[in-house]
Image 1 (spheres, rainbow, N blue to C red):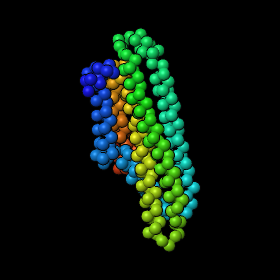
Image 2: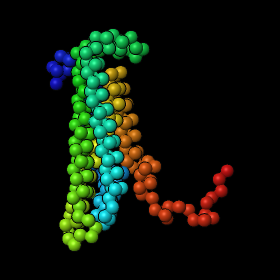
Image 3: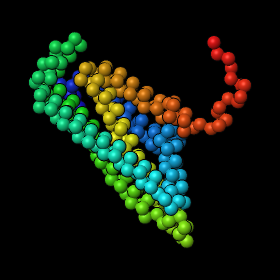
Image 4: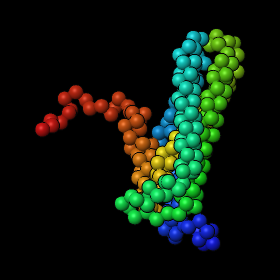
Length: 245
């Protein structure tokens, strides 16, 4: 490890900051997807399954088709954005000499070799490449879910068991698509944290911690989480509101 660090110009703080970045991403991934049972994603997965159950009980499924189209269009947008980000990162790679000179003139005291800069940019390319594959696969899965919606027997079909089975498969396909879409978005957020490494190792650690706090709060302490957990009992009764100054 230390031989590679000397070859590429990494310092010990660089290695520690990058290790923290990778560990934070991995721990958050497993905590959200395999550990938590109360996050926003878990609640929305339950509603996706309920959506497909309700879809199977109606003959007119124009609304369901429109929602599927909206989900596909949003996923396609992020996939296209990923390709633009990959192109921009490749441009940074081609302009390494100029970028290193500009970075050296910044008032942060950055000292970076061309090799170190290029290794960091390659890491950024990997992140955006990962995001693209996730968004592209999510787009495909939403297509599969749309096909399953179309294949779900009509509400008046005598085979209720088959209707429930295909609707359940459509729901699970939609949940899988949303899971991969979320992973792509997570890569986008963490790419912003990764940019801190171009300033300094301490900046990478700080931006990683900041992004982790933001993502965690959106899952468990956001207005969206409050909305999905809302019940009528949460509203104060008439005359029970306290006077405010």
